[in-house]
Length: 193
Length: 105
Image 1 (spheres, each protein chain N blue to C red):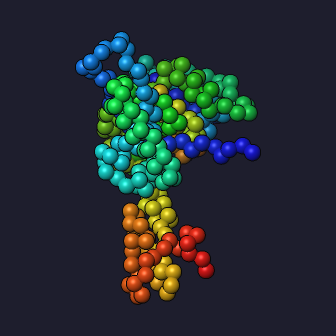
Image 2: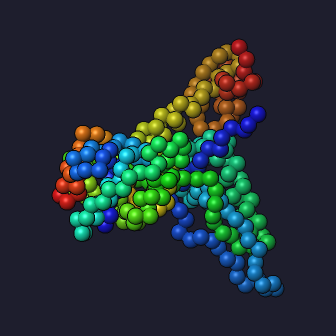
Image 3: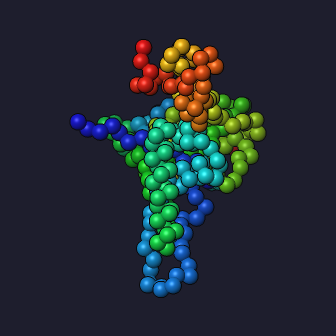
């Protein structure tokens, strides 16, 4: 059996630097050892620890599943910790990724175009030169949809009371407002009907 | 700046080809010198890998902008990393001359 094809991770921007070097080591034994941090791991750290998103939100942005995002994130933290503790240098490169670029649609000629130079802003349509264009983002709606599609239900195992699951709140911490029992996830093996 | 337009013929009356990898011809138009060149696409009948091979072809011409009807998923990330701008125009009845006129606005 062949394994499932690898899902490419979506990255919004490459990192501003390509790595980090330690300095001030006690015994400078020539070149420091190197840790290779993948771009997807960099992106997971950026989303979870810099933008303070939940793993679920970050996974939607990177277009992978929530468990996969958590795995990438854990790997990233382990690598960074190893570099910090053992004084290794970090090089950010590699990973199975694709870059997400901004798309625009022109109102006067009906064309769609992207912006390959992320630093510079687009001032006119590259085809007809019209200034009547706007950002085109089909993913925006999809992200919302995907979040709601993943929506789950917490259910009371004894009386059947249901409430929508809140992300980041374990079901077992929620209390049934009817009979006071702890709730379980409706799709989980703990709940069978 | 050089612009590549996918076309289904080698005249200015030819229409915009809606495919990128397997288009008949690439029209390379230089906006500075107004020079027009038609390059036949060697990958038009390729079984697979037509897209990346075509990207290589247009990139070797020094093109900075590509106009076509559609770009495949492989091509988008390739062109993105090469910093070539993609313009999607879903109007198959547009002729190459009309598109060049639009570029000169």
